[in-house]
Length: 136
Image: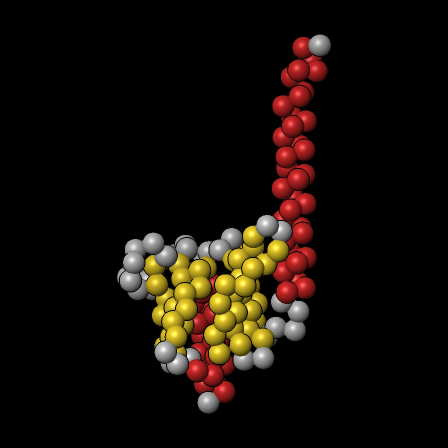
């Protein structure tokens, strides 16, 4: 009986890890469907983003589905900034790593897109600015 009680927490941990893995697999398969046909796409802990047919959109994963937060027309992009996630309006330095947000400004609209990794956000900045210049 004591041996059974010792293995019980391991059984609970196994079931919990299996459930979390299933949820992550479902999130990734929903993302693949959502991002199908996109020129650029990303999925991280902060959310999902895609560039499809000149429209940049980002979504968060809520209640088992992607909920679209905002869209931005890349042809109208005027300014792209990398900002710190939590320190208000402070721009992110080039040495900074970790969580951040990408601010898209243009046509009287401002949109903040969170990123889990500053390096990935810097790559997206370069690619989005390249696409915006190509559309001009």
